[in-house]
Length: 272
Image (cartoon, rainbow, N blue to C red):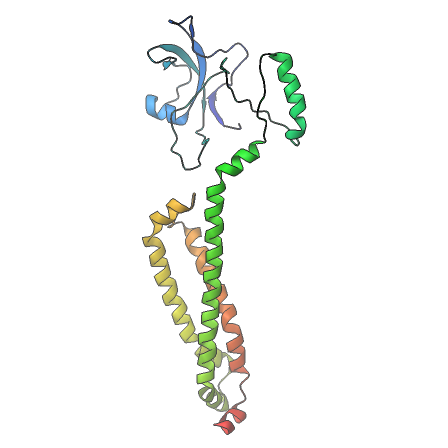
């Protein structure tokens, strides 16, 4: 499972789970606990070597020695809170889950696994063999869907913003064609013309960025509930959209700026 061991040891062959002898006599066993267990029952202290009573039946408990201490791990949902968890050696229950780590295609080794299990425990029957990747894919389906939809709508919004900036700046150049021609006839440099043309657009971009940033921070809790491990106030989450928007604004401003620089003063004044 690749769960990091903080302290203690893994299970050994001689380890057994806490259990009952007959129907009433409890027998001690070994177990491994997670960080949530230590926080809940030991105030976050290292629990290795201590003994606890774990419930075996509705009204019966058996002593268990804690032999290992591991990191928290989510099993069914990446958003689920970490619950106190106890790992014990495999029980003789009717239904168990067996995980096998393989170097290649796990399904190709399914016949070998079936044969090995039947040799060790002829009474065991493997009824559902599937790669863990399938399980993880289904568990992460909601997160992937939300991330994909967010990316899609983000790209759409970015394209619309770029088109809008291009249209506004292009219209501004058309409306100020005579002014630009006069300035260039009086000796204005290309850099000055570009700066005059793009100043208004830069103001709109800064204003829109400020409004969007304020809205994003205000709805931060909602965003964090949608996207896993995304923090609204994270510097990377704030800087990345600003840089992308700035890049889109520069690309949208290039054609109108080039058009403004290429205006022929003589032709413009003659037509006016």
